[in-house]
Length: 350
Image (cartoon, rainbow, N blue to C red; front, side, top):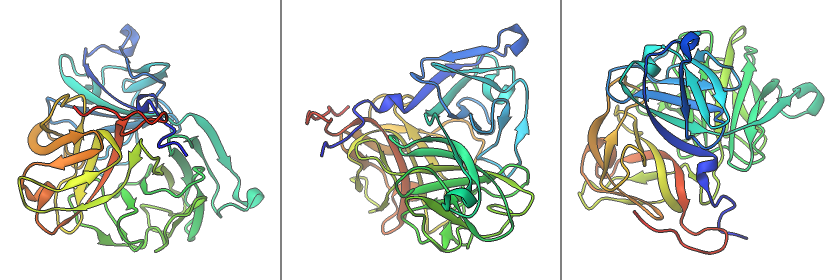
């Protein structure tokens, strides 16, 4: 079996930096190109101003955003993201994503294949689901309506998700996060600093290769509520959803991913610490130290993560947010290039 089936990760995930122009859609908006594919999930943040994170996806449709940094319900704004293009997306004069002369970062993922599951007809799950999937890259965007009764939902991946991020669209409450490195009885909230919390949102049940389980809370499966779930399965050489233990040393823990990371999201799980995002476009060379915080609207700041290496990342500082001795951390990482491609050729470090 080949080391990886994805020699070029940038056809499924890519970070794109751009500058806002403040132009309304009626005057042409701001067409962002250079993503490399038509994105289906776009996460945008101002680098220079204290603006909220905003997330758009092709399943909910254009002009609809939710904010990872808040508990707010979905908002529709005709001047936000108005089109998913073949090589990027178009935004209007919505200030959080296109203020004139501001610098922005967008993280972009490709799904792309329509998905629909009638649970009563297929016998897969108990709650109907629709969405967009990419089984090659292990990513699906799943929409469902709450029933108020514990059940299961098809995710379409054909392999077990290692991370699931859920937001109720029409109610104000926390995001719900499952990560494969914490117990099925625990969750995290991407909009808070909270440590992992005992919560039966996922019905105390780990996902399977076909479904994930939900209980009945407002944040996950209440009657009359609608939901969006972003589901991720690991793909060798492309994505990794793991954990590490800090050592409190500037010669820090090495975290093996099997690829040169392009994107790392991490969170300490035993304490109230911020989420962190690092990527290979805001820091094209080591040290990697430019950070944004998903649970905060803060502008970009500096905290050393360490070095992005050909097969993982190496921590280079002692800060409790990323490397406290003995503390557990979870992460979500996507590749710039695999450690070894499908022809057995190793990549190069930075």
